[in-house]
Image 1 (cartoon, helix red, strand yellow):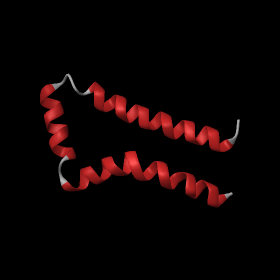
Image 2 (tube, helix red, strand yellow):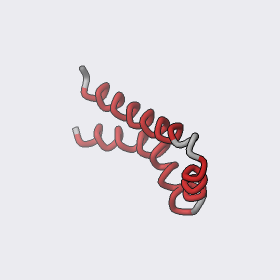
Image 3 (cartoon, helix red, strand yellow):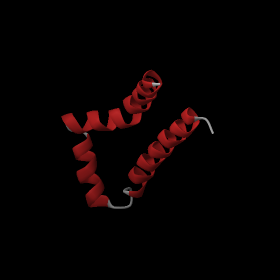
Length: 67
């Protein structure tokens, strides 16, 4: 397989794992409220946005420039 294909599959898998983690927390009411309050605060929302938006865009650029 192409190296980029493996890389994109890894990124896709990491995003699916992140989504599954958030969906797994939905039945746990008290914990979910604490986590959602944490994600609504200033530095943690940046972490969530970076995980789902910026990291999948920047890592392929870094890998393609290093080759």
